[in-house]
Length: 91
Image (cartoon, rainbow, N blue to C red):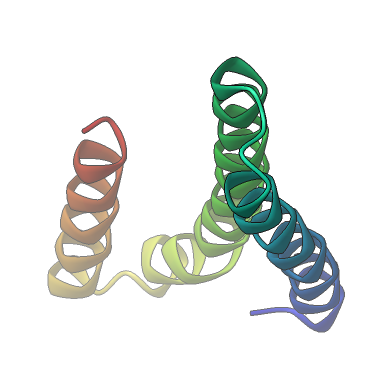
C-alpha cells in the first residue's frame, strides 16, 4: 500500500473507531433505537469508503503491475482476487 493511502486509511479508521465507541455509549445510555441505527449506517458508510480507497490503490498498484508484467498467471490471479473481494463486498 502506498504511504499516502496508508496514512489516509489509518486516519479514517481511527475516526471510525471513535464512531464505534460512540455507538457503544449510545447503547449503554439507552438512546433512541433509530438514532443508533442511523449511526450504525454512518459507520458502515465510512468503512465502505476505506474499503474503496484500499481497493482503488490495489487496482492502481498490484493489478496494474500484474497487467504490465505480462505474466498471464499473475494477471489471472489478481483479477480472480479482485472479483472474489468485490463479490463478498456485496453480501
